[in-house]
Image (tube, rainbow, N blue to C red; front, side, top):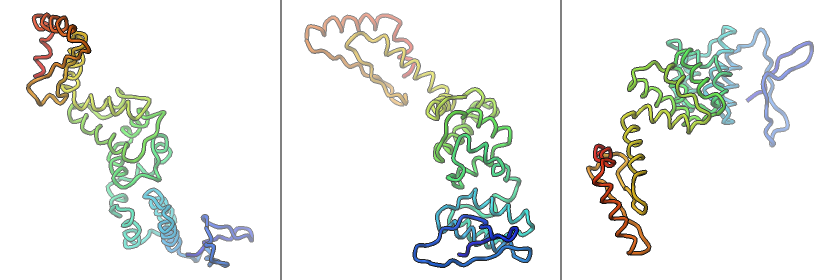
Amino acid sequence: MPAWVVKIEGEYIPLEPYVMPETQAKIPVKLLDEHSKFSDFWKELAKKRLALATLSPFELFELFGQAEALGHEPKTEDLRLLASPLKFDSGWFFTNGKREVFTRRDLLASFCEPDRLGFKELKSLAQLTAVELDAVENSCAGFSMKGKQLFSLLEMLKDVAVVSSQPLVEIVDQLKSDSFEALRVKLLKAKFPKLTVMLNQLKEAKKVMPKGVTLVMDETFEEDQFTLVLKTEDAVDLIPRLEALLELARSEKLGPLYQLL
């Protein structure tokens, strides 16, 4: 793989970083001038980065954009060859107006690592409108996410939008958080509103349990019963605890608990 250079004011300037193999004393050099085919440079540079495991979908798009801007659009077969190891459809990014996510690299860098995103994450991001993308950035300001976290976040946002019948922008604006975990918890509550209410009711029911009595209940609420566990170090303590439990059962404080069954 040659090192591409361009001649500027009598000096040969490398067009991109070149790592010389330790076993090689000399390197092949290709000069990019007005007679060169930029598409050849694009293809060889992409192959080199792919071989060095430094090529990402973002890198591939940028190289494609550079070639296209100079009127040397890479051939479809070249693009397909390079896209295959990256596990994405070579034609998907360059059709149906999906380029916007790639032109907003700085915005993405504020809450994730663009170069480390795979096709799955980029496809989810590309489905957002410009306004939605801005809203996600504002909501995630102050922390960064890995690819899997970002994909999980975007999938939950879509689910909440369906459940709540709210625009995604409104949902994101309401859920601004200072960490991924805090945002994930808020989204889970929004995704399962009824379950969230029931969990809060269960938490309140546990608070009225007498000392030494533990309430055990399936938090998925799929079982139709609950269990009360009495713990004691002295048998003498059982009587007052049973009496307190009996008094509680006669009151109305356990009403919400039975409604959960």
